[in-house]
Image (cartoon, rainbow, N blue to C red):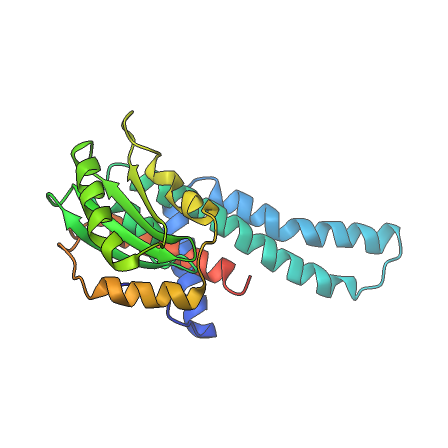
Length: 231
């Protein structure tokens, strides 16, 4: 079944931020220095303005909000970098990196040749996107899956991409989120939801294999949700 985003409470958001901080700090030596700089810089600037330009002390309130925002931005950027780097070469990486992305309903393993050669489906305002991973043999599988679902979605655009690090792939797995968000908006949200439900009725081929990538990606996805929720 296509996954839909769940609403987060304030407490759960704080928990996911903490998980993302721990996850990123363990893998990125530059994270803490950059995070500290992002948080402290607004206070340094305001202090200089208060001391030398006689700005009112209330400016420290504004600096607090700016510091929190800067900290979340750095967290989101560094966590995304770590998750993308760890995704390379992992089975199910394409799905793990787009699972939970705003505006998309994602279903893993809708077609597969093996546990490392598979096709994932994402439905959003752009239409239907099929992401294949696992090498050139999956290109044919993408075509077969596109033909199968085209009978169901009619004139709705269906995009197919082979994701990986080989020369024959359309783009790297690290670019998958960016490529999805750059696609044009072709249908309304209500139509996307309707299409996702109809495609779910077709069933899926197999589940993606369990392993380190989905676990690692959960922290990255949590950081993105915490930093980008409400934009």
